[in-house]
Length: 588
Image 1 (cartoon, rainbow, N blue to C red):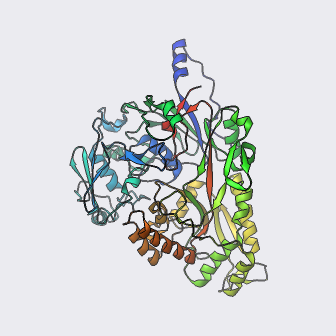
Image 2: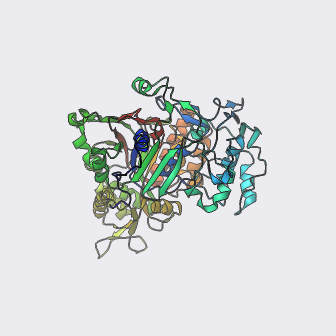
Image 3: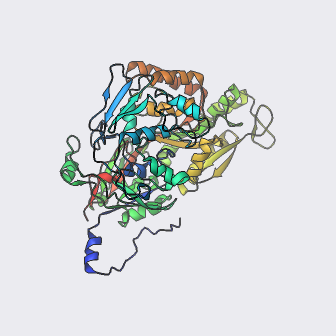
């Protein structure tokens, strides 16, 4: 691909020796995304690339401890973990004082302090019909009075000045959230990158262009953004004084970072490099400081155990250069969503279910794990992945690869092969699957395997190419047939995954546009329960319903193989942060 902004920094002529020393002292981190971002308004986006930038600009109430495993939630701008009422319905947060937003013209030259009212505003904004937030389900029906406020707004703007019992301030620095029902996963959710403090005057100042003008209290500000090409983050001059103070976890990293100012990096340069080979070459030449190992190059980079995908280490030539490897099975699921509203693959009739099952059985996931993933993945068998609360390792949800059975199933339900050599629906219309795909080389490789799968059952497919952010829009609008998806844990609890098929999330995180009254009823019961046997029984029932309806073809869970240059300090993959840049240092 042709990048407007080259990866190699241009040689600059400085006017004085002093400025040269100043430039040399600046710590810069060079990183890359493999897909374009969509914007930086926390209420308007839900992709991980945008979220990676958002969590460096804004502040959530709580956060995740960087080194602790299992992942632990700790206070961020709150003075302590919230106090919770005896009935589990009311949470009270006390905010630290003296935290300020980054400078912005919207503040008219005044230094703007973070207050509890900013979180009240930000939470209400997720339910504002005019914002159309993909996270509107997060609190609307859960907090006392919020649904009524949203309903009163209709299609118009929410009345932010109306006091709502469920989300209000008790004083300038005290926030109270009152729920209709218990919400045991709330601390995990609040530690993610979605419930961030936004200043009302900033949102009002930028109107429809808030995605391009993020202003938060976090460690960085957005200095430059070329959509789909590059982003530059620089230190927030108003950021509070903090130091690294790790207790438990990786002792080596604690020794590297403890006592240093947080964050250490002065500037973060983010490029969008969708093709894997250019990203890898940029890392090899030292132009990128971090990179995920491109799957086609896994065997060139790692020494693998062909009998055990869990075992791998860097090749000696890379290890000798000081290259660092951080590796673990991702807290994620990848899947292929069938649009349940699509006229070809959607619907709940037996013939439609048969078509989706046949497509699933015609695709050989073991083959793509071997050839594309280079054995660095395992089959998805449950909506909730391993290492996440609620996972059942004994459940088998994926349909086995079985083309003869797939063809027999289509024959049984009236999908006849016509004179053209392809199947027609029971009503005689040709079956053509609308398959959304991307423009990269790896997308084309996946399409080849999918074409083989469709050929095995004599079904036509139209591979419709579009950029990732365009695919996201098509998913939300339910305007597609099939599309690949992946969900990485915002927080390590099963609720973060089971909500992906909840009917109330159609148009948001429910990529399959799936609506099942049986599933929804069980989900609504499960989200009131903490992790444990009672909730796990509900999860098993929900997985059985999904296996029956087949809104997803279960794909794989990838091993994360992340590399860092030898000069990067504090490097450790984290399963819930979208990016770890703020925890790093560079010492070249």
